[in-house]
Image 1 (cartoon, rainbow, N blue to C red):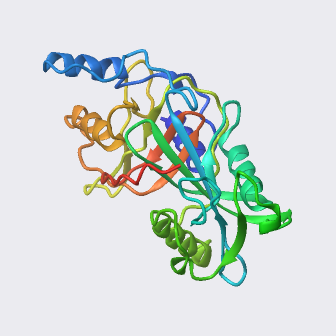
Image 2: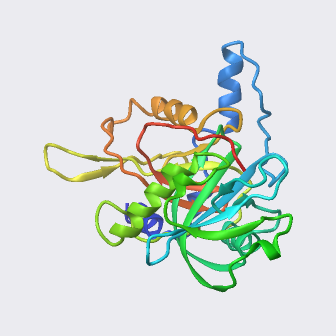
Length: 292
């Protein structure tokens, strides 16, 4: 099991997993479609679904930069549907970009500032085909956009102390900012994970790779749930784009409930690898508003 331990160490360090078992999927989209068909339910998605940016899957990036004074970098919307309202720098990832490049581009376009992301703070999802990746980072250059430089990307940008006093495009960013402030003020201490960035490795599927841990009462040792399909590896579930991640995850765990490792002690660190998300999960889901 030294290989499994090495994979877990790479996961916690935010590194890509490159072992031979990385491509093994224990609960595929085809399996899920077959399950539904057995119940007389027609699947809303084909088993050969491929995630294609801006076509069959939407990736949103959002950036939170907090000044030494505690002010948050905000931008004023220029789009006709929400012109004049304020929001975090955010937008859709473009084909050919990686997540980090998209975050830097959006901040530059909407605020005029160079953004250096330091860690992925959280990933939000609405169903299995819309994701928002929230980064925390620092401003390392550029010039703050003023109304004289307004364009189709934004009207202006500003450092704001009390975000709730603004006319916001959507209040869904308030808990994001709250969590970012907490991370910023307690960085380096528990219970926060160390800085972690998406690992760059291409994938053709959307998957969840699970690190499920229990502590045995008999010997107080930690044990990890391992799939023995093919070669020993961390259990992997393909994400169904027509269902919530929580639904797919819950069903996946139910399938494995007869394994010896029934108890599950889970925490909330998230590691991203191209299209794959490798996570230590708390089994409780909460969808965010579908905003871009």
